[in-house]
Length: 496
Ligand code: GLN
Image (cartoon, rainbow, N blue to C red; front, side, top):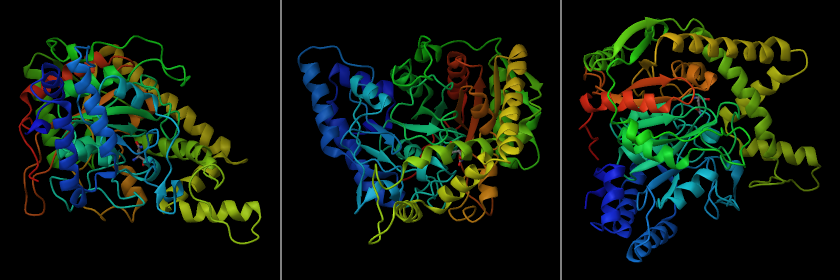
């Protein structure tokens, strides 16, 4: 009992030693999902039979004395944007659902195949904002996910279900996708570790595309080492994704043991501007002080184009989304709405009208507009140029510092319903996560001290963000793990 309270490395080594069977851990995970899902909304589909079979296969391998993978017997939740062979995949959208039944892909995403090969057990598909568009998981077409620290608040998004699965100890780890913050922000909101790797570090093959030049799959775990181990398993070149980088995977887990003495940390002024919640600022400053007392040197830096990140991202991401989502046409997948004697255009219109939610429609319209003749130069091309300036800010900064420390979100978890009627307020929640996405650099969120309880809100989780230069995940993990050993959030768990 209590295996989901333990870290990923503890579970994997207990399974390898035979202290517990993979089947027992899998049963615990499935029971935890069944017990808590109605209240927390973390999973859209549960694949208990397949998970138990994966676990028994690990146990049979062990009985035969075969070598076990790095994640043998470890339950991992999967964001529902990841294709899973024969298992419902809806991207939290009605357009991939026909007569109540979600699309069943004929193949596994590369990351799913790699998890399986490493012995992971995959009990289900996690809730998300529809097509990963959002920052609260309220845009799910089915039901919102809820924050286990306070169920009246959102767990963040878009990978909110994956974050909740780990925070509420339903699984030991999870995969999400981060286009503009969708792993880091929900990790920060739920008090778990979340990593957005370097763009291209992890294959996107089998991830339902939102904005292809930004999308990146990454891990959630209850500790930094667990996230590092998952990245070692899922990362690396894949022939099926031409943007995946052909560079060796680092020793990420081993990097978590490294000393951080002498590491130079840059702190960007622009990330502590007005609009930053005082409780979040205090927590993040405290975290940076803790790293300084471990021997890091801390200095202020400038990332001059930070202010333009939100506008730039919401032009580029919507442009790419409008093109990627053209494939949902009622012909190839899922929903088809076809009035009698309708022509093709009417069928397309009716299907997309009924199948997409309001936020997805808003983005398709915005994206189509910025790409249209006459506006392309003014919006899309301009945004591409500003993206280059944002990337150069980081290139310059990394000449003088090794990593950058900052908040993840300007505010702690907000209430369900608080921002959903105001898209701009929702988009501004991404202000500190978007620049790393635009630049393609790796970034992690680690739990820092929660905010102090006040008369209008309880104590709530806060994330410290560590960003590093492209492919420098090892240094990012080293700094994150060093902070984790001293973080006041280390032993905190939500009450279920
Ligand atoms: N919140 C951002 C958006 O809505 C980022 C989403 C993401 O990273 N998938 O686009």
